[in-house]
Amino acid sequence: MGVSDLVRAELDRHPWDALRCGCGETAEHVPMMFEVIIEAETPRDMIGYTLDDHLELGTNLVEASVPAVSVILAALAGELSSMARRHFLITLWRMVSGESCDSEVSLGRTRLGDECRTRCREGLWVVGQVGLTGGADDAETAADIFELVDPDEARSVFYQSLLRRRMKAKTKRRPVI
Image (cartoon, rainbow, N blue to C red; front, side):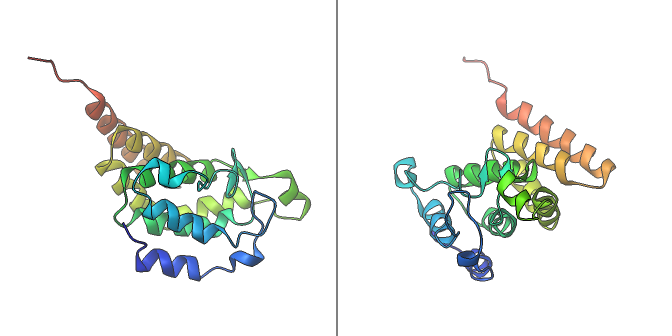
């Protein structure tokens, strides 16, 4: 799979070299990591190229987390391997459930979690689509994201229920004949 024009536009839109990364450097290497993950054909191709500890440290967020939400949503809107889709969805879930790390708080960036959740709301339909069309794990993660992000409680409850029913239906085993 190649990097889509939409992902490329979202990557180009942000000054990664001016943003703090979870690894302690600037985030100028983050676009390359997105590209490797999108283009990876096997888990081996991704060795050393995950977003873990760059965009989030567990659920502790850094400055680069906020623009990365838009890149992840752009990637999820396109064609991805199941491996890349899963990595991006889990990273997105961590970011929308997170809060600013201590070093960001000391620099006055106290609302990174809120900023990530706001950005995610802009592409919440993409999350729903991935949950409805992906595997059981994708449906569960998408339901969790809806719970954390959607301010419309009735819609959130509806989609959480729908996604969790899909998850259960996808995990049921058929009897062996």
